[in-house]
Amino acid sequence: MQSVAVITDIHGNAAALEAVLQDILGRGLRQIVCLGDVVGIGPDTDRVFELLL
Image (tube, rainbow, N blue to C red):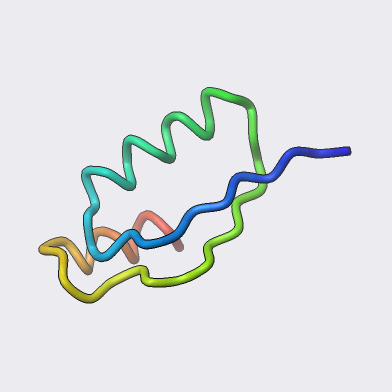
C-alpha cells in the first residue's frame, strides 16, 4: 500500500509549504492530498498556487 501525505491550513505561507513539500519528497511520498485552507491570510498567495499546481 502506498503512503499518502496529507496537508492542510497552508494559509498563503509559501515558506512553510516549501519546507513541508521538501520533507514529503525526502520521504519518498509521491501522492499528496490537500484538505483546504490554501490561501487567505498569508502573504504569498501566488507562490502557494504555483507550488501546488
